Image (cartoon, rainbow, N blue to C red; front, side, top):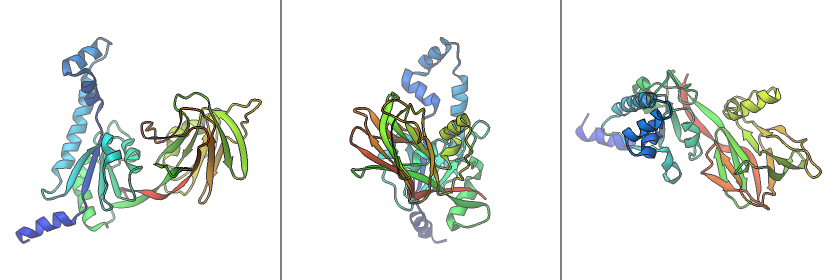
Length: 310
């Protein structure tokens, strides 16, 4: 290969965006300032810092294994979860998420179809549902990216949910959307779906995808003894009202349903303050939802393109 060909090859490849988040050990040091202070804090409460150090070491080892496999001329950038909202993704970026499964939904809401693969740096302690690849597989994954073909992996298009407010603001979610009161007081609103309308007071409502149906929604399904099975790639959403309260002015008949293509759930806020909408548990990235504002929840036009083992 001529000397300049490798350089051109690196620039022709998509940029690799490695996404991580701070470990519990990192957060301990941030909070207490020094290792000694963090250790003293835990020991004074009958705990030890050792498990935090061990988890941190496993993560660092897995991340180092991934980084060591990148060719020297590979275009790449490492990004912390806290910087996702302000980062400008290119259409052909490849996202390499290194961490626990929950980090993938955090990334997905900012993407527009970019290929994503999840690396589980601690497979003995993390489930690895959305991050199914071990760090040792990175060379095979990089080789697959060169041709985008081969029997070892397949592309899974996971369904996403979207909420759009009347003023055009919108949020995406891979797991679920939440509509309710920021402080978890009673949320008041009007719910419209399938030609029916009801004024409600509840603990809020969630709208879940097939991916999210194994998370927060699963506890609601089990509690209510519902039969619900939505595949991650299926074009359906399930919505649930949490603890609807029947009163003189509110009802509790519309508390569960499914949404397919071209169907939506409409919510009109009657919360004077602190009404919010957020996705995938990230309350910091939210839409205000107060009296007079209207939101429509349904299937998103885009998917998370997740690379998984075949």
